[in-house]
Image (cartoon, rainbow, N blue to C red; front, side, top):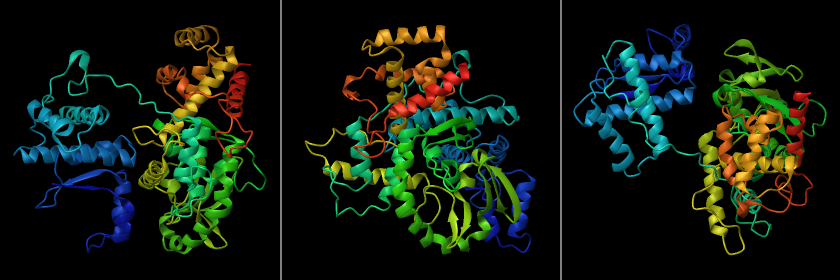
Amino acid sequence: MQLFFVNSQLAKRYFDSSVLSGEEVARLLDDRAIADGTPLYLDDETMMPVEPLCSWGRSLSNAELAEGTMKEYGRIVARVADHQGQRGRDLVSATESDLRAYKRARTVLQRRPIGDSAWGKESQLLDQFYGHLVDTGVLRQRPVRVGARGKNPMAPQIKQKMDIRHLTLGQYRYFRDVGLGGQQPDSSLDHSFRGWSPHRNRGAADLALGTGMRWQEWATVLLPELGIGVGHPVPEVDFTVQACAKYGKARPVYVPEESMKSLEPYLLLERPEQAATSAKRLERRHRDLFVVSRIDHESGLVYGMLDGMERVFTLSAMDPGLRRITVRETDVGLEALAVFICQGGLMPMADSWKRYRHAAWRRMVAWADGSTPVLPRKRWRWHDLRHTYALQLLNYLERQMDGEEPDAVARRRRHRRYLSSHTRLNPLLIVSRRLGHSNPATTYEYLEYTDDLLNEFDEAFRGWVGEADSDATYAQIASHAFGLEKRSVG
């Protein structure tokens, strides 16, 4: 069995048949509401659809899941089908012992076993897959017995806590300046550095740390959202994330002045050259891009041509896929509207940002000595900057409410008092709203780290974002968040 994914743009460009044209295939997909990323399972010999797998793939499209999510789910089911094939069995007739053998293969026997988090996702999907087969009458019951209170018995038995990993000020500056920026630990220039676009990567780190945004939020931000191109200086910015946010949950994002300043070297020095170099390449892809003709900064509407049609989008409603192909006409040709772009002229994808981070880690390890900050055993993630933002903001807001109090039990008692007196001014809930957590209990897990004295320093917010001698502090961020809460109370 072979696995493919629907891609209407590739069909338009490359499909060649005497029966249907690529344009007709794309129209049929649109008419049937089959989204890009829908998994297709085809027989090895006949290349005919394999049922009921293709029907299940169609249900993912009907559920309007993200393209990347459908691809991930499609690969998981294909992997289970391959495992069953090696055992001389098919996926539909799998028994509980078959699925437990698959679990053992994934979590114990394979060269690099997956952890509880990854297996939890796979077991949940398998439970949903067989539930779909039962609902559609293909099976009478799931192959795995239902656990207590309807729980999935294949899921990990131990509830995993959040993997909260945060950086100290010294660690962050070492990551940003040495790892990403190509400096030596003493802040001098490393002439052997061969990294590409260090100003972009440093600016991205400061934007992530100064806003607390998730990777998919800050990596896909567009120039108009940062007030770039409005015709006048914008020292600090408020904008809304929604389509790029987790679960599509809208929330306001505040970008402090120092995060904006940190982007200036990239926007003035590196980005114009990258855009000019890639303009001709983008011109050749003109018909596949969303070419913007006008931006209404007040209403947040973007007007342009996509697939030969005049389209209008709200900035916050533009998903990552659309943002990546959004360009504008300039004097040198087409230029991406994304803040961060790569050699191809469009925004870097997840694998690219992962590669930048891995290269930074190798530099940090190579330069590490007795004078550099202690490196953790695990390689840092971009998401660690979000955790750092949350912890620093929570610490600061707590201190503003009632000063220092090192006792962790006392801190939890204070939070209960905040909840009973005025929830809008509870530091924990303020941070929860800034992060866009669906449940404040998620933010509550940060509390055990707020008393970690190894990660505290005298001026908790000074000098994190921007240059070392900057007066910018997280107090600016905290004051803005606190001010919004007070106005909502009034």
